[in-house]
Image 1 (cartoon, rainbow, N blue to C red):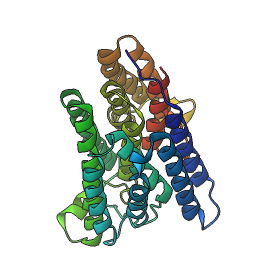
Image 2: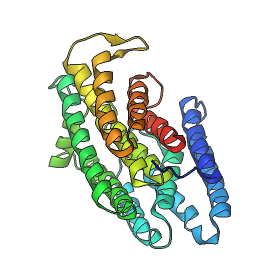
Image 3: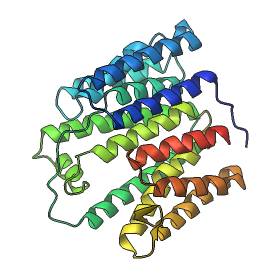
Amino acid sequence: MQINPLSIYQVFFVLSALLILVWDIFRNERVLQEAKFAVAIALCAFLIYVQGASQLLFVPGVVIFYFMGRFYGSIDDVPIALLAFGYVIVASTYSNISIVAEVALLGLLASINIVKNITGNEDRSNAVIETRRDVLQFFLGVLLLLVFYFVSLQSAELLTMLLLILGYITVDLALVHKEGAAYRFIHGMERHGALLGEGAVMLGIGTLAVIAVLGSAIQVMIALSALFLGDSIATMIGINLKGPKLPYNKDKSVLGSIVCFIVVSLVAYQLTGGLGILFGAIAAIAEGMNTPVDDNLFVAIIMVFLVSIA
């Protein structure tokens, strides 16, 4: 497999995004969001320096996505999300789609604050809800893999970006109009006591990280197979079939990790040959680890690093 080497600015971008996440885990000051926003703007200046004056859409893009993330879960976010939708259309005509994705990722990471609506889903078990969520995630992953396989990389990335923003708009409208079908659907997908939409937001940010940094359709497909297929099927197997637990995480099952390894390895093997076995093994280990970072985001970060340097 031909892998494009990471440029200096991509390494700097990934490390900066990871620093923002680690900082968020250990936050203890109310001004953290503004501080992260300042970090994102500073990183914008660096990327403009590396990419040249043609990338002047960086700063307004980060500002737009910052406010979209900041007001996530309120009606105030809908016009901002629509503005972001238009930004993607316009900016993608002047810049590479992965650059636009980096802008979106920076803005959202700088503003992420999902302490919004706590669900009260008490009418069904968490196992039933989790299975329903993972089935949806699995088939979304299959759809994305087909898109990246049959459509050009730039078109596939653009479509993914627009779908993510459309998802933001839909969730925001649902949280405002709680009597509607959209809210009932989203509420029915969330575990009791969980933050409404948290998993979906983290999955979206993880997807942005994948298409922002990775430079080929094959790389993107390998990472997405771990993020959407491996993660979801491991959880489905783990909560529905009893078996021994992982020694490094008692909340995850050995059987789930094995199935995750098989699924990701099969996809990656078709794309890269024998190296796909390594991708499957690392994906299974990452999915089974217990970290302060959301699974969807952690798996995305690990796969981006792995696929980039393999």
